[in-house]
Length: 77
Picture: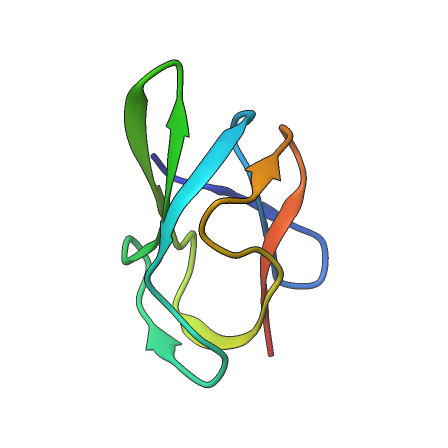
């Protein structure tokens, strides 16, 4: 699932659910389409993909966190 890029190089959650795993950390280089994290909603897993190439500046969630639609998950530097 392609995440929506928010203003200022942010990746927002495309749905409400729980974070199952986080695949990146600050400083990681990612390409468009790379998996940033995996969300679970209603027993279905959804990969959250990077909308662009760049460097991860900040990861704002951890595995086990509950997130809402539109919540900022990752910021690019």
